[in-house]
Length: 411
Image (tube, rainbow, N blue to C red; front, side, top):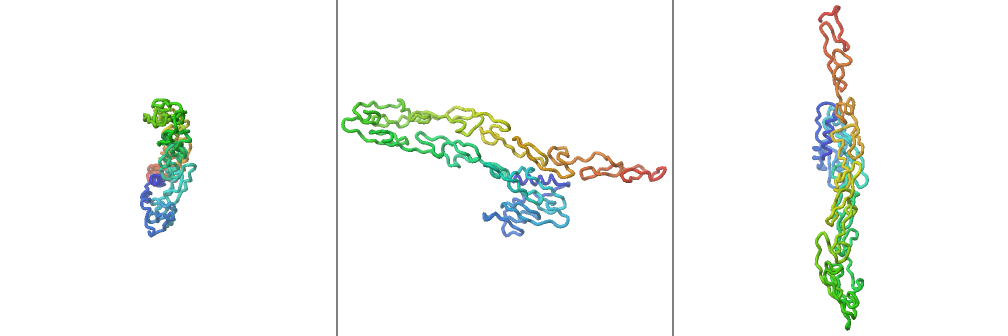
């Protein structure tokens, strides 16, 4: 709705003569969803329940972009009336100057020109879509979250060309297709012949007993043999946290870790640790960010017109162009991101900056007469300037005071 208000304001500012009685396009938009049976031509979006009519949109003439994505043809004016002369899509005697896409900051989709027509403002490229950033008729992209993408671990594209970090998995789990999972071990894959051992996924495996005089652990951890077995205790290497096999047939629990460390988080099973994230893991490329392990990492600096977070994402280089033509309606301006943008052209006698304000159409009338010494002459802006009156005995003829008696006597 914001661009519609700007169209109305721009149309008023561009009107050729004095007062402007344009009806707000916001008002037109608010009346858009009307009964399909309303009088006047109606448009529809093809079946989703949206309908609009010329009457519903308060349009008396011209082609108007309706809220259903189509175009309504609302006829023409009679006599000397102009379409848009009484406000957008209303007949009146005041000439209406249509706005441009640039003047209202629109760079995609279809908009009404504020007078009698429809403007095609182009299309978007890449991951951008028209209105995708939350502003109607402006190319943009709203990044998705890990939750929206159904990702619980690893990195993933956020849908706008940036990398999104969705965390790490718990000890024993692996990240596959951005989802955490765990494949439990078996007695065979561990090489355990006896006793109980953790399966690596939170459960305990029972791997049987030894026969005869053999002892579990007598030939190595959880292997049957004739030698004695010295059980592992918490604090021994490989027994710092979680459920651990003591090597002699039993499972012991060695407790939990203190955040940000997790059991196995440093890459060593059953030991507390933490693997710090890299800038790439986090999808960041500037500034200082937390590494997930209590420290910080520097992800660099931005170049050119980009600033850190300037595009709306923290610690990612970007630039927000905004609407450089806001308050301007002519000439070329830079958008703050190293790009030039045209804000439109003026209609004579106005010129760009002619009223004293850069990039705004205007005209400065002549301060004094240059051709006549009496009567009036054009002021260069569509009006006239008074050149004075003649003394008694003289008459203004062709812009100059002429003696009407000889010698000149008062008339």
